[in-house]
Image (cartoon, rainbow, N blue to C red):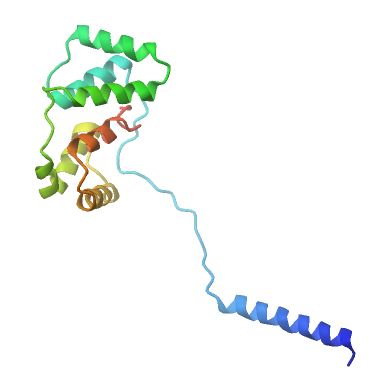
Amino acid sequence: MNRIEKIGILISGIALLFILYAYSQPHYIVSDTRIRTTAPPKSHVKSTNQFIAIAYTDLTGQALPTNEIRYLKNIYESIGDVKLVEEMIIKNLLKRGDVKLPLKQDMQTEPETFIQQSYQKFFNRTPSAHEQWFLLEKIRQDTSLTPEILYMAFMTSNEYRRF
């Protein structure tokens, strides 16, 4: 047997080993899966006035005076970055003295209740099992989380901006 034949047999043997190895490994079949939420679709975006008035009412339980809505709307429309303005408005509303935030201790001792009430307040629905689990884990694992931080997250989400 000459050198070329030996190399050919060696290459064939290696190829056979790769083929046998590939067939011995598990094969997975991935199917397309549609993921649906149980919440009804929210296809309408709140107007600037609606966003400001509803955010204030959600935090204080009171209606925002018309002159303050106009003032905040002017700020809103004077800056081109809508998300930045929304964050500024929500952050400032959360710092007001008339805002009714849950106590951090209550959130940590009864996180399930906090999550349920927050979803109802901000999204007008109950959380899915996955949403409930995710936030429950976050609250349990991160003791630096406060109701203010979570309210900020809820109120600056895309879902909060829609109805």
